[in-house]
Amino acid sequence: MSDSIFKAIADANRRKILQILKQQQSLSAGEIATYFEFSKASLSEHLKILRNANLIFAKKSGQYIYYSLNTSVFEDILTWVLNLRKSEES
Amino acid sequence: MSDSIFKAIADANRRKILQILKQQQSLSAGEIATYFEFSKASLSEHLKILRNANLIFAKKSGQYIYYSLNTSVFEDILTWVLNLRKSEES
DNA sequence: TAGGTATTTAGTTAAATAACTAACTATTCG
DNA sequence: CGAATAGTTAGTTATTTAACTAAATACCTA
Image (tube, rainbow over all chains, first blue to last red):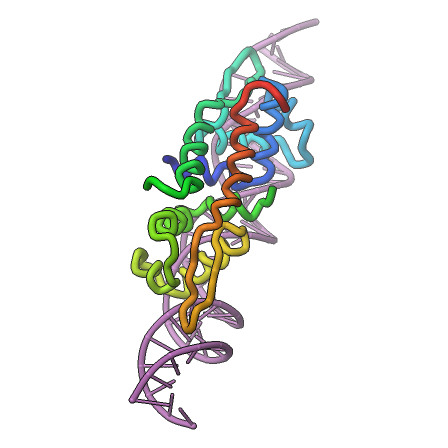
């Protein structure tokens, strides 16, 4: 279970990106940027971290790159949490 | 949903502490320290971060402080993950 | 009370992180 | 081709984080 996932979701802005993508299905980097105050370069860095953690997909189409959630990776976090939550079974 | 929880679980050593406490129910700081290479002062800092995030309980007994998991807080993380995982419902 | 053990706090340092601006790459379209 | 747009990469800087050692606090026991 990759450390990069936990690092990725440790940042509030990145968690916000995930929420936005949950709601909007698929958005270009520029569209995501409209939700934030910081520069596009900063957003690009956040997207890279989310991509490296496999939390989002990127699909290039023309001059745009569309991002969407990779919901399957959340299963891993889920498993981790459930394991700690349950009082029996190691 | 507190940022401090995500920050707390972002560190691999702290996640290891949670796993150890899951298995052992309740351990003193010194007992937890035997699982790690780093100093007791460093461990103490990690425990403080986990305590501030409400992920663990501390109960003083004589000269020892016993730590245990606060499993109820994992419900919050669970809710967060489930919300992102499900494809409908915002 | 003095000495020992357990743990935390204070102060420091090195490494990691998040932001910025500027420059670069890729694509579109006149 | 050349300009405009979208996005990333490079390089810098300030802040945060995780570690260390040393000192402080708290409790126990002879």
